[in-house]
Amino acid sequence: MIQGCGSDVGKSVLTAGLCRLFANRGLVVRPFKPQNMSNNAAVTAEGGEIGRAQALQARAARAAPSVHMNPVLLKPQSDTGAQLVVRGRMAGTWQARAYQDRKGELLDTVLESFRTLQAEADLVLVEGAGSPAETNLRAGDIANMGFARPAGVPVVLVGDIDRGHVIAALVGARAVLDEGDAGMIKGFLINKFRGDPRLFDDGRTEIVRRTGWADCGLVPWLAAARGLPAEDAVALDRTMPGARRRVRIAVPMLSRIANFDDFDPLRAEPDVDFGFTPPGAALPGDADLVVLPGTKATLADLAFLRAQGWDVDLAAHVRRGGRVLGICGGYQMLGRVIRDPDGVEGPAGEAAGLGLLDVETVLSGDKVLRPARGRLAGGGAFEGYEIHVGRTAGADTARPFLVRDDGSGEGAVSADGRIAGAYVHGLFNVGAARGALLAELGAVSDGVDQDARVDAALDAVAETLEDCLDIPRLAAIAGLEGRW
Image 1 (cartoon, rainbow, N blue to C red):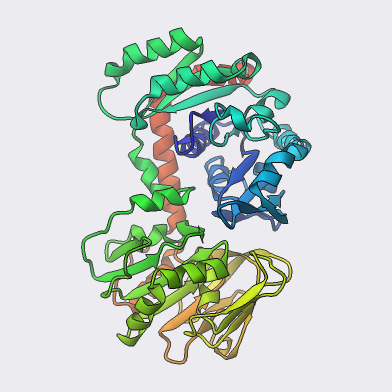
Image 2: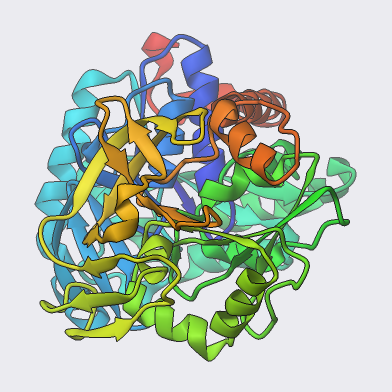
């Protein structure tokens, strides 16, 4: 199990890299995360949803994503509440305090899913959440030591040297953990190192002396990881504006933005100047296309969009002849009205939409979780997925944006063709679809499928980990001596 001294220390990428490394060595590998908190979700073959980080790790392991790989998923809808997803299915909305008091009830479900994966694999690589040193969260824990101990899974603890104070972080974790929890940790590794690794030899020796844990290696800054989808929206805060290229595409950074890795392929396009517009900044006046992204709370983020003045910016963009595309929740916002009569995403209510498409949305019924394949109405094959609550109907749906393989239409397009929306995520992943969309803006795509980019990045990360980590020691910790 890969645990960390905090969030964003690189656990997800390291787990993915190790999945690919061990899979390349011929082992049957499965990823697992007992509890994840993310609005970035993926659809599985069973018709459930899991965190996209676990879907990436499944890809790294060359395995099909399964709901057992992430049996508990929390999707934040507000600062204090989240939608609870258990084995891929929505199980209600919980306030943080109530969930904290009752999360231990999910341990049996978590352990059962883990055993299911364990029975089919040579190696299960488990990712923790946050830090086991957050001892105030230890009661009822199912994400870190509360899982590791009943499951009997040895732990390697990751320290992030890029943040500084990494010796204090690792030694401090040893100091605050009780003996039972500390005894699960069999080794540590240092992540995100820049420079000459020999300069930290004394530091590694000090950590071993103070903790008694085995040194499993020092990982350099993984440049190849930039080619992998980010798990957390915190990564968007580090987005830097690019130089002006042939086409400019802007995405407003909604407060509950979801599945933002939809846009990774656009960021890689040489003809595209892509950028997320942060709160407090205006949408760029020279944008060719504004994309409204998915969101976990459509009505709340519609209000957030208006509070930022982005509705005014969007209206001006349209008057100048600019194009707008809405994805999932962004598609819902483009319509005339959004109704949530049952309080699916928060307090029951309704709000006027942006009025750019002649459609209306009602947030009710079962959540739609399914893969989607077909072609853009304007040409270009796509392959993506749907993950949403709500049904959208209206006059503009007579001009669908997408056509599925079965011939049915999806989404809507305005009469002038400049406003469009659909529920499908992953529209830009396939080079053919992305090329068709960019051609309408006057840009030429590189035509590379995103899956190929991700696979190349996973191989590069695995190769680096092979060089810098003590793989035999990690294998021994995992109990692989007889199968290595």
